[in-house]
Image (cartoon, rainbow, N blue to C red; front, side, top):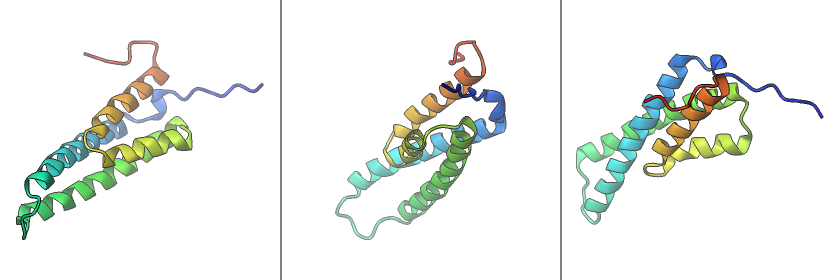
Length: 119
C-alpha cells in the first residue's frame, strides 16, 4: 500500500482562507436574507428594485465563494465529492456557514497538532 502525503495548511495561504471565509459569510447572509424576502414578497409584483440588486450581489459573491472554495479544495487535494458538497453549500440557505466552519477546521487540522478551533 502506498501512503498518501497529508497536505498541510501551509499549502493554503492565509489570504485565501480569509477570502473564502468572507465570501462564505457574505453569500450565506445574502441568501438567508433573500430567502426571507422571497417569502415576504410572494405574490407582489413588481418586486422592489433592491430585490434584483441583492440577488445580483449574491450571484457575484457566490462566484467568489466558488473560486476560493475550489482553490482550497485543490490545494488540500480533496475528493471530487467533498469539493462538490462544499461548492454547493452556497446554494442552500445557511449551509455556507456550516461549510465554512468545516473547511477552516480541515485546513487547520491538516497543518497543526493544535486544536482546530481558536476562540
